[in-house]
Amino acid sequence: MLVGFACIICILTILAANPCSADCGFGDRGPEVYRVQVELLKQGFPVRVLDGKYGPETEKLVREFQRRCGLTETGYVDKVTYYSLLSREDLCTEVNRRVLRLLDIATLMLSVKYAWGGENSRGFDCSGFTEYCYGCVGVDLPRTADLQYEFGRPLRRNELEPGDMVFFSTYEPGASHCGIYMGSGKFIHAGSSTGVTIADLGNVYWRKRYYGACRVLG
Image (cartoon, rainbow, N blue to C red; front, side, top):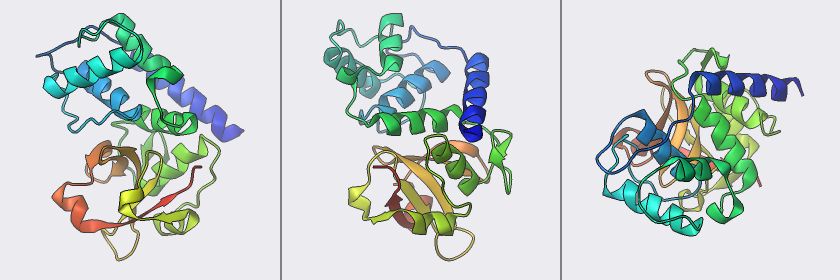
């Protein structure tokens, strides 16, 4: 209960510091576009590139979102489209609600700095980040990456779904780094050089160090 309350306070604080925005379309770029891309990814749309640039892929996915939600297909994110994207109506997504809450919490932590041993929004290490995020949706993970790897049901890479955990061998053999899979080959993690960020499993660094995955939700 205390963990959940702390999560709510942290989320409200971050939302207050990062108010919602809208009105963007083809050719635009910046944090507003990045957030639209992230929201589409969280709801199961196949976003290949998270770059904050409103190009053909983003426009196509926005049109698909608008079509599925019964909105006018313009490919432009006006306020109606933006708040529909955030409202999470059942029509708009096939992603499990608990998984969406997990991904919401995780992405609200984007850019939180890395801190060895950190386990709250003042700073995270990789397993502190996952422990915190899953704790907010009622999963009590062990504290370290290797024990978290043993906690869930093992998965093959082709079985990955949003909300699953992914693990890497980085500074020592075995599962020494971890993150949360978001879909479309993307995962969110607390990187030692980046803080909380979204990365691509296909990136040469992560591809070479991929160790395994497990499911702790569902």
